[in-house]
Length: 159
Image 1 (cartoon, rainbow, N blue to C red):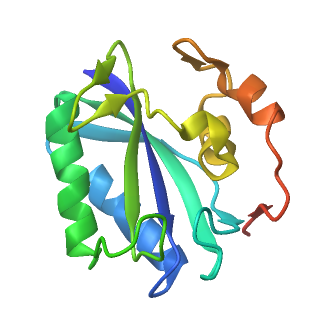
Image 2 (cartoon, rainbow, N blue to C red):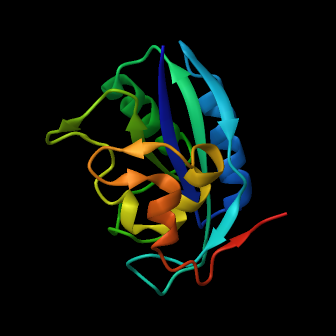
Protein backbone atom coordinates (compact mmCIF):
# COMPACT_ATOMS: atom_id res chain seq x y z
CA UNK A 1 0.00 0.00 0.00
CA UNK A 2 1.14 3.51 -0.83
CA UNK A 3 0.05 6.94 0.35
CA UNK A 4 -1.32 9.22 -2.36
CA UNK A 5 -2.83 12.69 -2.32
CA UNK A 6 -5.64 13.82 -4.61
CA UNK A 7 -7.00 17.34 -5.16
CA UNK A 8 -10.71 17.84 -5.80
CA UNK A 9 -12.42 20.87 -7.30
CA UNK A 10 -15.75 21.90 -8.80
CA UNK A 11 -17.56 25.09 -9.77
CA UNK A 12 -20.66 23.76 -11.56
CA UNK A 13 -23.82 21.84 -10.64
CA UNK A 14 -23.69 22.19 -6.83
CA UNK A 15 -19.89 22.24 -6.42
CA UNK A 16 -19.86 21.38 -2.73
CA UNK A 17 -21.96 18.27 -3.32
CA UNK A 18 -19.85 17.31 -6.35
CA UNK A 19 -16.73 17.34 -4.16
CA UNK A 20 -18.39 15.41 -1.33
CA UNK A 21 -19.77 12.80 -3.75
CA UNK A 22 -16.33 12.42 -5.34
CA UNK A 23 -14.80 11.81 -1.89
CA UNK A 24 -17.30 9.00 -1.37
CA UNK A 25 -16.40 7.50 -4.75
CA UNK A 26 -12.69 7.70 -3.92
CA UNK A 27 -13.39 5.89 -0.65
CA UNK A 28 -14.97 3.02 -2.60
CA UNK A 29 -12.13 2.46 -5.09
CA UNK A 30 -10.77 -1.10 -5.12
CA UNK A 31 -7.62 -1.75 -3.10
CA UNK A 32 -7.84 1.78 -1.73
CA UNK A 33 -8.67 3.21 1.66
CA UNK A 34 -9.52 6.88 2.16
CA UNK A 35 -7.55 7.95 5.24
CA UNK A 36 -8.24 11.67 5.57
CA UNK A 37 -10.31 14.46 4.03
CA UNK A 38 -9.37 18.13 4.13
CA UNK A 39 -11.79 20.89 4.92
CA UNK A 40 -13.67 22.40 2.00
CA UNK A 41 -12.55 25.77 0.65
CA UNK A 42 -14.14 28.33 -1.65
CA UNK A 43 -11.45 29.72 -3.94
CA UNK A 44 -11.34 32.17 -6.82
CA UNK A 45 -11.07 30.80 -10.37
CA UNK A 46 -7.64 30.21 -11.89
CA UNK A 47 -6.76 30.90 -15.51
CA UNK A 48 -10.18 31.79 -16.94
CA UNK A 49 -11.41 34.42 -14.49
CA UNK A 50 -14.95 34.85 -15.85
CA UNK A 51 -16.46 31.83 -14.11
CA UNK A 52 -17.91 30.97 -10.70
CA UNK A 53 -15.66 30.37 -7.68
CA UNK A 54 -14.54 26.81 -6.96
CA UNK A 55 -14.99 24.49 -4.05
CA UNK A 56 -11.68 22.72 -3.42
CA UNK A 57 -10.50 19.96 -1.12
CA UNK A 58 -7.91 17.19 -0.92
CA UNK A 59 -7.83 13.62 0.30
CA UNK A 60 -5.16 11.22 1.47
CA UNK A 61 -5.57 7.61 0.39
CA UNK A 62 -3.66 4.42 0.99
CA UNK A 63 -3.76 2.39 -2.20
CA UNK A 64 -2.38 -0.69 -3.87
CA UNK A 65 -3.28 0.78 -7.28
CA UNK A 66 -0.44 1.92 -9.49
CA UNK A 67 -0.23 5.64 -10.23
CA UNK A 68 -1.63 4.98 -13.71
CA UNK A 69 -4.50 2.83 -12.43
CA UNK A 70 -5.33 5.53 -9.88
CA UNK A 71 -5.25 8.17 -12.61
CA UNK A 72 -7.64 6.08 -14.71
CA UNK A 73 -9.99 5.73 -11.74
CA UNK A 74 -9.94 9.52 -11.22
CA UNK A 75 -10.79 10.11 -14.87
CA UNK A 76 -13.69 7.63 -14.61
CA UNK A 77 -15.06 9.46 -11.56
CA UNK A 78 -14.79 12.78 -13.43
CA UNK A 79 -16.65 11.37 -16.43
CA UNK A 80 -19.33 9.97 -14.13
CA UNK A 81 -19.83 13.48 -12.73
CA UNK A 82 -20.35 14.86 -16.24
CA UNK A 83 -16.90 16.39 -16.70
CA UNK A 84 -16.42 17.84 -20.17
CA UNK A 85 -12.95 19.05 -21.11
CA UNK A 86 -14.03 21.98 -23.26
CA UNK A 87 -11.75 24.79 -22.10
CA UNK A 88 -8.42 24.62 -20.29
CA UNK A 89 -8.83 26.09 -16.78
CA UNK A 90 -12.51 26.66 -17.54
CA UNK A 91 -15.58 25.74 -15.52
CA UNK A 92 -16.07 22.09 -14.61
CA UNK A 93 -18.39 19.81 -12.71
CA UNK A 94 -15.44 17.95 -11.22
CA UNK A 95 -11.68 18.06 -11.40
CA UNK A 96 -9.58 15.37 -9.72
CA UNK A 97 -5.80 15.74 -9.82
CA UNK A 98 -3.33 13.17 -8.61
CA UNK A 99 -0.87 15.36 -6.72
CA UNK A 100 1.65 13.05 -5.13
CA UNK A 101 2.23 9.34 -4.74
CA UNK A 102 4.74 8.36 -2.09
CA UNK A 103 8.00 7.19 -3.65
CA UNK A 104 6.86 7.83 -7.24
CA UNK A 105 8.33 10.36 -9.64
CA UNK A 106 7.05 10.33 -13.21
CA UNK A 107 7.20 12.65 -16.18
CA UNK A 108 5.63 11.29 -19.34
CA UNK A 109 2.84 12.14 -21.76
CA UNK A 110 0.15 10.73 -19.41
CA UNK A 111 1.25 11.71 -15.95
CA UNK A 112 3.72 13.91 -14.10
CA UNK A 113 4.27 13.24 -10.40
CA UNK A 114 4.46 15.15 -8.23
CA UNK A 115 1.92 17.40 -9.96
CA UNK A 116 4.09 20.03 -11.67
CA UNK A 117 2.03 23.16 -10.93
CA UNK A 118 0.60 22.45 -7.49
CA UNK A 119 3.25 24.57 -5.72
CA UNK A 120 1.91 27.66 -7.55
CA UNK A 121 -1.72 27.14 -6.53
CA UNK A 122 -3.20 28.09 -3.19
CA UNK A 123 -6.38 26.18 -4.05
CA UNK A 124 -4.29 22.98 -4.07
CA UNK A 125 -1.83 23.63 -1.24
CA UNK A 126 -4.41 25.02 1.20
CA UNK A 127 -6.40 21.77 1.49
CA UNK A 128 -3.25 19.65 1.13
CA UNK A 129 -1.83 21.53 4.11
CA UNK A 130 -4.78 20.32 6.19
CA UNK A 131 -3.64 16.74 5.52
CA UNK A 132 0.14 16.87 5.34
CA UNK A 133 1.83 20.19 6.16
CA UNK A 134 5.21 18.49 6.57
CA UNK A 135 4.95 16.50 3.33
CA UNK A 136 8.16 17.07 1.39
CA UNK A 137 7.56 17.58 -2.33
CA UNK A 138 10.72 16.47 -4.16
CA UNK A 139 12.84 19.43 -5.18
CA UNK A 140 10.28 21.93 -3.82
CA UNK A 141 10.05 21.78 -0.03
CA UNK A 142 7.39 21.15 2.59
CA UNK A 143 3.74 21.87 1.83
CA UNK A 144 3.40 24.38 4.72
CA UNK A 145 6.49 26.31 3.59
CA UNK A 146 5.29 26.42 -0.01
CA UNK A 147 1.81 27.56 1.04
CA UNK A 148 3.30 30.41 3.11
CA UNK A 149 4.72 31.88 -0.12
CA UNK A 150 1.35 32.09 -1.88
CA UNK A 151 -1.36 34.75 -1.96
CA UNK A 152 -4.46 33.38 -0.21
CA UNK A 153 -6.69 36.33 -1.17
CA UNK A 154 -10.20 35.18 -1.92
CA UNK A 155 -9.72 31.73 -0.34
CA UNK A 156 -12.08 30.91 2.50
CA UNK A 157 -12.82 27.82 4.54
CA UNK A 158 -16.40 26.62 4.21
CA UNK A 159 -18.38 25.64 7.32
